[in-house]
Length: 336
Image 1 (cartoon, rainbow, N blue to C red):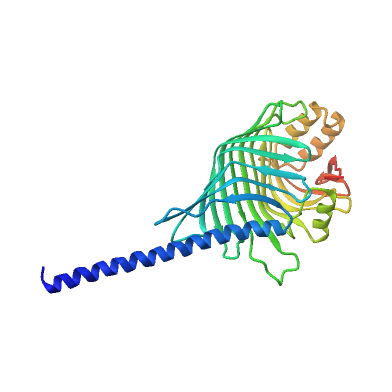
Image 2 (image 1 turned 90 degrees about the horizontal axis):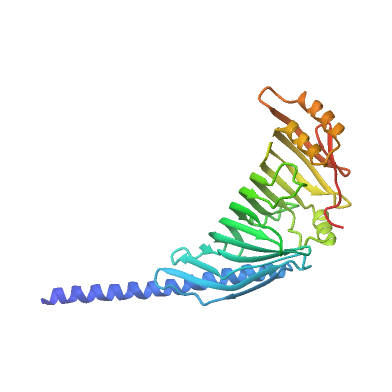
């Protein structure tokens, strides 16, 4: 080998060694950033009053991946009104983008709310997270399938597919009531346990909600927590809601909050199909008096166009749910 060739070979080797060393430093910095962001998010939720339990494994996956596992994760409201625990959470991110995280969480979950306990199984469940450097959840997407949920000694409810996209906008000090959460939720092919009170049947074809949670998130589901959320300007702005259930199809947008006695307070614009068939089903199930259903059907028929569409304002006020001029139901406080 000539002297020039030897020098070139040594230079290449030194360059590769420097590159490898630089990449090793980068990987460890990225691993530290991922670990710090996860820990910051958990600490922020604990500071808000949520009870979070999570044991994070050290970051592994060198040289190109960042992998960790959160063992036996669980979360609960400060007042104990709801809780969740699930399987180990597998987390992975590329070393060059440590805050763009993929996760898997298929398996058995336990959910409790207001004295009810549910065993939930998800055949598939996974998605992605985008964390901000301050630990805020920039965006989360989840897709799950083959879901079943049951209370002890009860038949299960099933959901073929469930999707969710959530985000925490960056705080804006100039906004009196900040947006604390954005959401886009969907579920398809829902099968409920048989129940004679389900006037529209036990199969729901589709549910969807997209919008924003205004004001700080409620710290629980009891009367005190929901009242504090309402008093702080709490509201749910729905850009779109959809439901397809038996003969009924509804889509619309609106705003939902709570009144002084924690009854629903809402104003929405809706497009409804199948209104007459729905009223008949409610009467047949004993959930509405037959005469009231007939009168309501006559009134709504006058407002329905030639394509079967009914465009109505939907309001909840003073303890009454109304569709246009027609009173549909009396509303009770969501919690006492």
